[in-house]
Length: 100
Image (cartoon, rainbow, N blue to C red):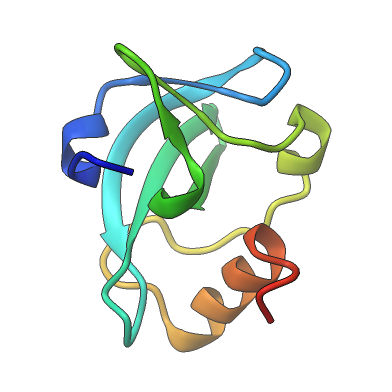
């Protein structure tokens, strides 16, 4: 991803099928690595926390390269501050399954 994750705040977010999954509302950091994660407002009661390195930027939107149904079962983690090492591990296993 060529731009800063903070530049993506306010962008619409879409699944790989083109379904709108929400809006980027913030950026938080992973424990240890300091890598950025996007906080996507998915529904009234749910935020998705997605590693910034998996999203593709378009003009004023981002695409998360997973299906809507896959994202519906994404790990729930704190959407503020820095992620704990346990939360980071859960996200890595979910969004980078072959990397672990």
